[in-house]
Image (cartoon, rainbow, N blue to C red):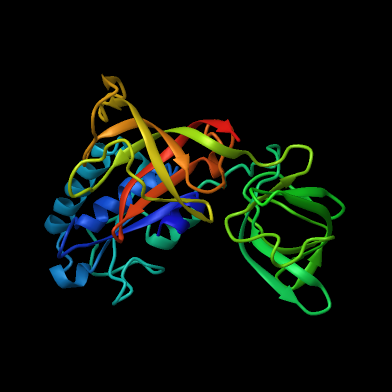
Length: 321
């Protein structure tokens, strides 16, 4: 879910009409908001189990709107749709069972989403998902272009592995293409790069403007769930684009009031569930990450520990190594 949300422009949040908001619903809304999703379609599903009742639908809508406001997500940016995925009501055809609803059905709502402007003007950033060896071609890194344009003939640099070379070929959907733009999932071959030179979590960028590698970075985080308190020295795993790196929270610089965004406390001793804070982070091994104000696609992350998402956040500034 984290990987998906960090790459998506929009999301469909599915909430069951019978159960309503669950702890996971809250986690998903919070993550979507923090990972930069600005608009949401809320599908109130399993309407068949509540006899297609408008009353129950309105209750769930109220519940979800409360949740959206909690994470400062404008409920006006959410479309609510009663559906039954099992029976097919209001998914791609209008339902006869809910004539009280006259808004868009799910397929219409998806088709109505505005097309985002691709970030082609930004410098190239392509996080590597996997590295393959393909006979006849050689080493083929695979990933999705987040920003900029990848052209054959470009000189590129992979960070933090710190190797580079010239792009020989680019393939998309098993066809050779001259270039790739944001959103394209591609495999490409770079002259002089071997299978063991690069790995998942590396970011490919122009040799003359290589991806930033952080010695430390300052970030704004929101803690969702943590059994106790988080203090300086805590070292969970940060998931940023395709990288997963253990990072130490070196200092908690300030606590932020999540409802107003104002500073509530300077240099607090600890933070806990529900708190928002600005923290300084030191990756335990090299990590390529960008300030979200400059390249938002590479500026957000989730923090996981003990098999759950503890917090999510965005990068404010980077001290390069």
